[in-house]
Length: 517
Image (cartoon, rainbow, N blue to C red; front, side, top):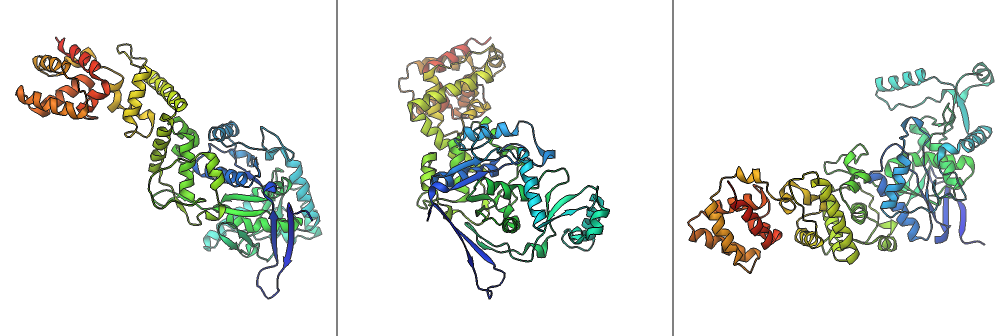
């Protein structure tokens, strides 16, 4: 017997209510096949990425295959360029596919709009076996059913009118526009959810017969995903819990075709801090948006898995650790995925990004890559201002990065208003508008020239002594000095600004201030 794929049906006792068959599958790791099947209706966001990542981790942890399938049968919602952007985002995150639109495999095409003939053939199979029927109901009639349900405060559902059409009715409707509906039967489409456990739902008791092939010849999700999962030999389906109510319906479709369903695992809902569902309409949570903001892919990977489980949690520490993708694969355990809704603390993403920034700065390649990126950010931000000079030497950039590592979560923060002094000197016009005593500035410059210990602690002591010996209120001295060397009214402490700039640069800026007037 071939143990790579062993499938059998167990007939259960008639005394056990609502259960007809239990499909049990055993797969060796090499036989595992999963798919990520997004709709190209917009940019990939955190929720979609979580699904893509967990499918990838499961497949690779089992030595299986990972398939990308594009579900574009709802043509009214397709966004141009969405497929290309999706693949680019996933590639940036380190997620590669074994089969998909750009690297075809044995079960392609992997775009549903290119598989229409197959869906129509499968639909004809259901019609022939008596599991489906033609529905001639107009949109007007369906709308009346919806309105009537709202009026009676019941759940809108199709009344299955066309299921019972006789030959005369069918003859009368010949030539009219129709769709194909699947006949739901009064049995539980039960299944064992790898995250939520046993799920049983008598779909026919709460829903009308669903459309599986629309009048335009395109399938609905229910038909297309079942047919494709079977034809592509998908062994495990990992998708959002919002699809769980439909899975019982899909189980009935598998039975109608005489196929064994795959294993199902539904991923818990991702919610915001206020309890609302994380939505693709939140434009700031798209992968591309995070990429543009300077978030590292490693930070996103580790942030997402911190929200939904799948790993043994280290409860002894609150520190943020960044694990490489290879380690995430080796330690992933589907049985550890949370079944409760997962709150996504978006504010915490910064801590993960900061942790990865520290990793980058601790390696020669990462440090070189980061300094080059910072140089480009500064140049793109300030290069149009011809009245200033930019210090973009490697030593200066590395010094700034080391100083800022515990202050920032993203190198883009270094061009924030409070940090402009790092790159720009106060202009002559700005200095002329400042109210300060030039004699005090000259004395301070001379005093600082003779200071060898240019550290924060020592400068704090030096400046306090200087204010006292020159009868200058210390707070006024700090305000004046901050304005002259940084042009800012707030930001890091004055001594810290001086250390960041370095003694030579501070003296140069004081020299410039001495020329006022």
